[in-house]
Image (cartoon, rainbow, N blue to C red; front, side, top):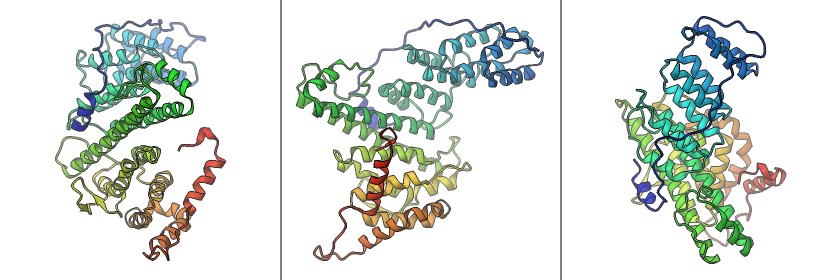
Length: 442
């Protein structure tokens, strides 16, 4: 699926195949209620009763009602509700027990059943969650249920929660480019978010190495593979301090490159589906969540990997237009902005522009002193996204005016006096000063 990542994965640690059977203690489901309830004889009414009681905060009572009901009054729907309720709470053992009770009563599992079980694996705290999730996903064929991309995303969410980037990428690489299991927007967002988190983890490790030689050596050597799941180059116990720093920097660069590959694959996939309307594969959409992850990562690595981070300029141009977009061969292109193309090809509305993503885009260009890029971006946004820009106009008006003035300054360095810190940077710095440290995103 992703050739560039397939090459990278050769350097990632392999993982052993899942065991045929993974055992976990499954607590029995409640069979008695705290008060007396009327138990419906109709499957629809039973499902409605379960929802009513569980929403009142009495999940055990709701499950007990289902357990007490006659089998003919039950249905796959009500058992999916039971499993989903436990899954949302991360109660994996109870969800698995409910799955067993569902099958024991002769009700076939559905895609919804497996989606809920994978959610339970993701939100649960069991050390065996990854193995159980893989076993659950592989068993779908046994039950005659064809996995969809929703189920694949459920498995990827387990890898995301358990910070296993290597398995997530391998799972992604096995996906077809078309059909029911073709990647969705959620697929790409999950993978990009995993890269974003891993970059943050690596920078924390780098900060420790820089701040204290002895403590850094100890903290790094004590970390297990699960805590650092995506080291392209492993750190041995006898590695010197300078070598450790070099390795961590290398891993940051590799992880960020992987993130850029994920974005490139998404963009190419989205454009292909938008132009191939006869395909049975669902269209890909665009919203700001995925772009925010990419741009935040560009900001994170900007000081250390400036050349790579500046690829964010091209990404912004690709999404919203207005800037000169350069392809892999160095040719300047003027294609339709990706957000416009995907908006016209789909029938589902998503958030394609908001204040946060505009802050990130302008901020990245400001860091690179690409003031002309900002002016062209603003013009393109007004042309293609007037509705979305209108509530943001007042917030950015003065700053855009300043960028326009900087763009129009004379070429003679002696006559040009750009400010050391733009109004935009001053405002961002003031916001970071006022915000609690826990709320600071960058």
